[in-house]
Image (cartoon, rainbow, N blue to C red; front, side, top):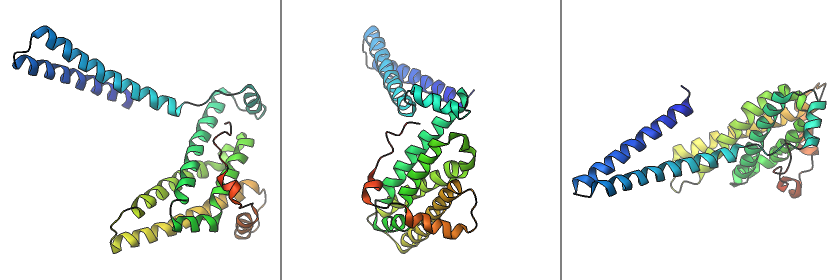
Length: 233
């Protein structure tokens, strides 16, 4: 039995227990049996409706938008089959969500803004995202970027912002924030390396190439504010 089915079973079981409990309590206070049964059943139906509505909302949130015929033809021209296309689109949709989260987090505090400006992270993540979209057959080359570096940066930056927003901070808290900012800086540096590795076929000096990537890309506010929300995957 998978986790989703087990969760559904537990929900239904708890709903049944709730219905029985309400019915018993109503009867115990001399409430008429038939109205008590109807009321208890109504509560159960309401609980299941609320749960089902929440479940549908979550499904819609993660559902991929309809694929255009033009985009499908493009994927097929790159050698992707039906399952490959579905996997690629879901992967890139997840990446899009993480990039938007990273963009929000890195603009949330002065320290993170400084790290972002130094590494040009928002621009680089969006640029690499679009480069991958253009070459879906190279997905395997960016597995570390998509499955490790992006989610790690999104999670740690979110935790940093959460802790930084605490009103009262101890010395230990400030030390933790300092260590976290150093780690985030290294993560942003890694994103730059991911970009250079994907764009360069022959890299003789990674450090030089990374610094050039950070400085040569357009860093104006217009690009950083540009959304990838409408980029089809």
